[in-house]
Image (cartoon, rainbow, N blue to C red; front, side, top):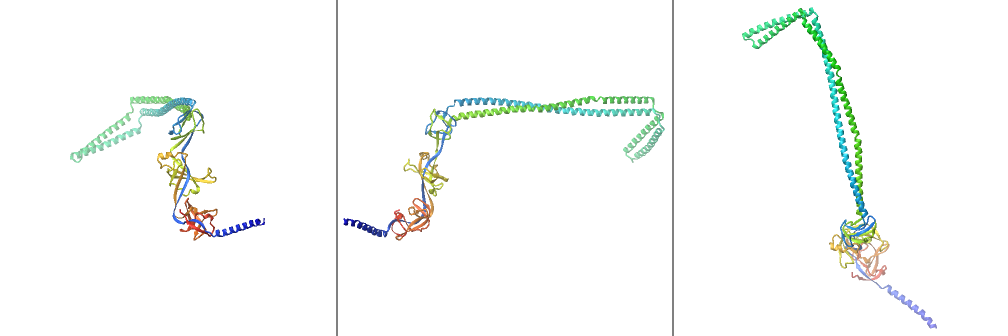
Length: 544
């Protein structure tokens, strides 16, 4: 029993010694690692993402509740904008359209009749006002003419009375002169006029004799002699007239002259009485002027009445306006009824193909319940869901490759058209991840190729971009990223040293080093996970 008790401790001691010996030799053994050189080269970064083919799609539903009477298309049929897809029961709507149209026709007829009545009323009112104004103008003209005639008659008759009175006074004065004996001063004045005339005659005789002698001697012209003869003749006539007047004054007036003067005075008085009577008879003209004034006032009243009649025209205008409003309302009701009837026809909103059909004849259609989906298949695009950390090499305008599992080995060329302005959560696959939606245009594809990519298909999108033309690069596997920094293991001789670096753009194959390394240095790739600071390594160049 005692030898067996000693075996177990011996075995344990031997095992511990073997482990210690192994650790001693293993700690000094070099670690085998693969290395790659740090190099300068343009940095081309590739990116890829999952995407989906999209197109303009519309879910078509009925704007009103109704029973589907007919379905006119099938899935896959091509339709154009406005093409009927289905028809709902529309008997009541058709009747409503007919009734609304009949009401609109009646309202339009009433509107036309009201407009015609209004036009007639306006024409009659205009004619009435024009006629009343014309009659007022004529009445005013007649009144002005009558008043002017009255004024002229008054002036003329007053002048006639004054003239008759003056003539009567003159006749009476002449009669008194004839009846009165001649006064001595009048006779003396008449004798003086005779003497003056005699003296003038002697002077003219002497002048005539002188000019006749000169004329005979050729010293005066015949015209001057003739003028002297005419002056002599006038002087002789003046003398005879003065002698006769003086003779009449000495003899006095004859009886017949006195009788004639009395008759003339009586006639002048009679004419004065007639003129005064005519002056009193001017009431006829005054009556005519008064009648003209009354006619003018009546014409003014007619104008006022015609203007007041505009109120009746305004009432007719209101009736016509009401008829017009009723017609507009009836037309609107007819249009609304037609629109409701149009809602019983389900039409394609744009040209495309029928993607899905969810309805059959007899089904009940209602707003919000999809009956069809229409897809505009002649213009499709791809929306790629790019991880936010892969967004840097994605550039607008760059060419990308689109592939689909349905077409193995086939690639479709597209172009980045638009990059979304925000990153959104990707909750379908990875909680917390965020993506940026990138729209890829397929406009460069031929129609048959584009038709192969159906809306809704999942595709793979890949592209690449040169991020730097002269970058210091290391394989991406050489970079170890921690919460604090990024580092690589640099192999110097047979030792490995950890070195912190600042990275730039990172691709799937290579990463840009902005500081911490120099061109030509070697960094560890495979096997770096077991490295410690200053550990011995056996470097083996990576085949990449």
